[in-house]
Image 1 (cartoon, rainbow, N blue to C red):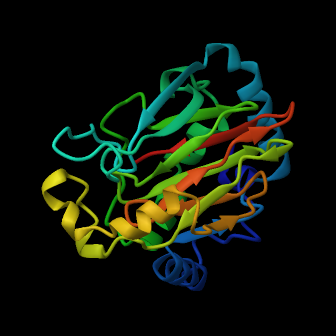
Image 2: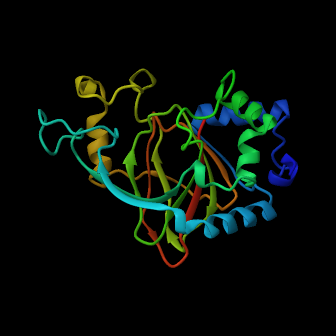
Image 3: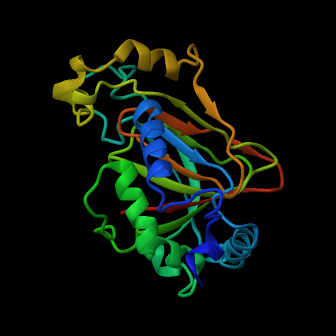
Length: 247
């Protein structure tokens, strides 16, 4: 399968210098880049069918965590941002369960796709994730599932939305809430440097986030180390299905 059968290259000319430059400018300015209609419709349909075909292999789990995805610290009050807990619930298929000839693997390994990502992200090269189970993951969020507020530990996240739920399941974020020089913080010794008042307002529901209305087939690049984000609770009989590509 060629890249042009997977990606709409007329709409998203990955090798075009001006398209790369505009994409990089948008990501640098907004911290997020959403390329709607990235997947060709037949490929999107095939990936949804593949995800549904293998859903019985998904591992579902529920956990609580703070926004930094780090353990709580008993030296601080229970209502301190560092100790406040949110809920994340989802199902996941890891790389070893993704089909051998899946279009996801062909996209992930395509030199033209990686070259585009390097140009937009300012990277010299991309390599498979150190954890071999994490390179390609498929996430399932049936009704009642959500992804709580958090910062990413990685410099960027790359996702493909395959299916929207009937309601909810919105990607919400607070852009660039952490200063760039603070983006590796999140440990208790650094908390005075963080925007604690803003984080409390968000966790209390007193600050409205930005919301991306993402349609199936959209490629999303997101700098989640600096921007707090979540996926709201999904509702209805049609679940949310998302692919995560990690380098």
